[in-house]
Every structure is written in structure tokens, then in C-alpha cells.
Image (cartoon, rainbow, N blue to C red):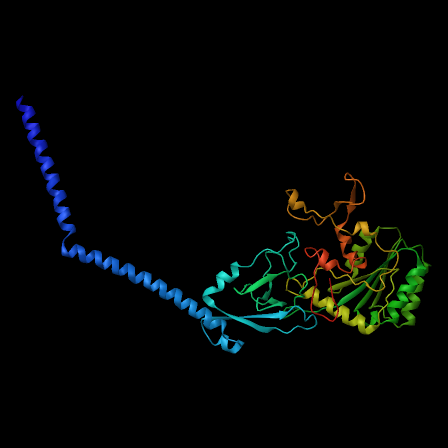
Length: 402
């Protein structure tokens, strides 16, 4: 054996011996009383944590039971760990009163908020004012103890012992801003020839007190003939007959036919009030002043409301009992059964679409105009139940709005 090799083996033996002694020392230290004490302390902490979690869950369960057993708003609100859920009865369409429904622990609020689901049929993404739109802070539900009554809950929460219901048939109370400002209204009418029908309509507006309610009356004559235009002459005589001062009855005109769109734009520019009531020149007023006043006041509230489900951008006032003739073709009012979202789009289009006619060949399509859908209730009294994702009860007024 070479001298160098012997030295290497001795060094290797020495290193292995030190490693063995180090390993044995670690084993002995693991059984040291201090090490065992540390280990027992860790186990004790673990048991304490588990016990604390069990206590917390037990305490939460006790709070849940304790809160749910509180039967009044005063009892629930007096507890700092409880939260009162209020709501209105959906069956009380006229001036519903908000009442106390149930009491829940505040520790459950996030869980209850996450229980809110998207109702079916799905509401189009662009219909943001729909009460069942997923982004709207509204929940309608019924208690499992009394499933026959549906309430609109004041909070965006769904209690554990309650089941969610659609809100389309549950009118939302109108919520007006604190300072709505002036709510003046202009009556505006576009006239194009056909003097006789305009005269019949105008006299009905005077008879039932429409001009006593509005702040101003704006008339635009499309394609005025000459200085002796018969419609303008009639309007001037009405101004004198009914003592309508110049500031209230305003007459404008164009020597050429501007078309309905541009003429209506002129009406809007000439109207100085906050709201504008468009009047069809050949549509007569058939309701007395009491009904007229009530419906126009309710319409203002819907336009001013800040609550989804009772907020409107436009209010259409047309008699359901005496709708007039001719009416819109029903084929232009009935919507398609499919959503463009199912075809990869972003929800039902607010513009024109095609609809499949079930009475003709599969290839045949009917042109459908969404803005005419509001005429559907003249044909179908059950429109609310047929298209709950497109139409809903609105407001809590004396009159039902859809």
C-alpha cells in the first residue's frame, strides 16, 4: 500500500466517525426532557387552537340561534351582533309598508350575500333597470315557514331559511331623491296636415284639463302652407277661446316637411320644461282629470326614482281598455324565443332582430322591432308571466305600470 493511500483512508475513517457521533448526539437530544417539554407545549397549543375554533363555531351557532329567535326590529337592533332584515310584501301593490322579517347574525352577512343567485330566464345584460338583473341590489324571497308569501328584501341578503324568488312581479317602492328640483312638464304635439283629427284630439285635451296640468304647450306645424294655414288659424282661435296666454301656448312651424325625426327634435328644443309629454295629434284623451293628474304624477315619480325596478327612462301612457284602432301588428311585437347571447353575443339586442314564425317554414323569419314590444299587453293579458325577463311590474302607485 502506498503511503499516500494510507493517509487518505485514515482521514476518511475520521470523517465517518465524526458524522456518526453527530447523528447519535441528535438522537440523544431528541429524548432530552427540555425537547419533550417543547413538543408537549406545541401539542398543547394545537389543542388550544382547535378548542378555540370549536368554541368560536359553537359561539357562532349560539348567536345564529339567538338572533333568529328575536321577533321584533327593536329586539334585533338592540343586539350589536345581530342584523335586521326588512322587506315589503309583494302582494301589497298599493303603498306597501316595510316590515321586519327576520334577524340574522352579522357574522353571516357575507355568506348570506353570496347566496343570491341569478334567476331564470336570464335577464339581458343591457336591461340594467330590471329588478332581477344580476348587478341590481335586490332580492325577492319567501320564508320556508310561509312559502305562500313573497317579500322584497331591503338588504342584498338571502337568509338561510329563505328561498329566492323572481322580482319581476313584485313592484319596487319608488325611491325619490332628496332634492329632485323643479318637475315642470311640457305638452308637445307635432301636426302634419289632417286638421280634423287634430281638432278632435285638441278639444279632448282641453276638455279633460290637460293644459291646466302642464306648464306649457308646444305645437309644431310640419310643412305650414302659408300665412292662412288652417291649423295655425285654429290654434290662434283656441288661444283666444280658452284664454291661453302666449307664454303657455307656443306655435312653431316649418315651410317644408322636415320628417318626423327632425320635427320632434325641434319640439324638444322649443320645450323648456324638465319633462316633455309627447302628444299624438290623432289620439284623444279619454280619462277625466282625476285619473290624468294621478297618472302623470306617478309617471314623474318613476322618472325621478333612483331604485331599479321602479325607475323609468320613458313612460308610455296609453289606455289598456281603449287602446285605439288600428293597433300595431302583433307579429311586430312578439319577441324571439332565443337570445343573441346564446349565439355568442352580449345578450338580447335592444335593436331590431329576426324572429322565427312557428306557423311557417323553418327558413322563414319575421322582422321584430323591440321598441314595439310595449304594445304586447294590448294582445296578451298574461305578458308579465310570459316574458318575465323583458317586462316587470313597476312602482307602487294607484295604477299598475309595466
